[in-house]
Image 1 (tube, rainbow, N blue to C red):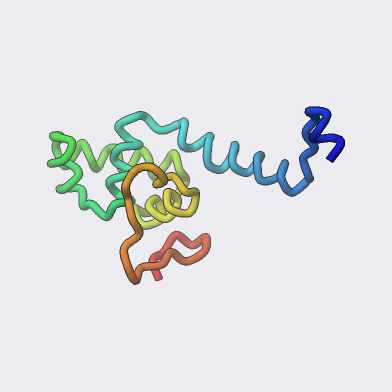
Image 2 (image 1 turned 30 degrees about the vertical axis):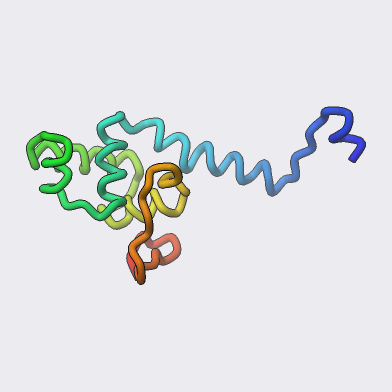
Length: 114
């Protein structure tokens, strides 16, 4: 209590580990994405197909495929499903209005729907 009252902060090893994890595993990859790649990623997380994303962003489906390929590489994931899982697992949908699909659960770190 005294530490807090004196305006000092004391971080536990677990808290520091979580901060470092967030910075390297979430913030770094997220910031490496372009604004358009982030838009595409959020639409993927919302369950949109490439065609639907292309229509929503008024670009060609081929352009969407390029963005998807780029963001998969930057996030170091192998599929759209893994990318969507990454978004949901790290809480990046907060404030976006996206809601989980009822009855669909994301399984652990495999990035698969279960």
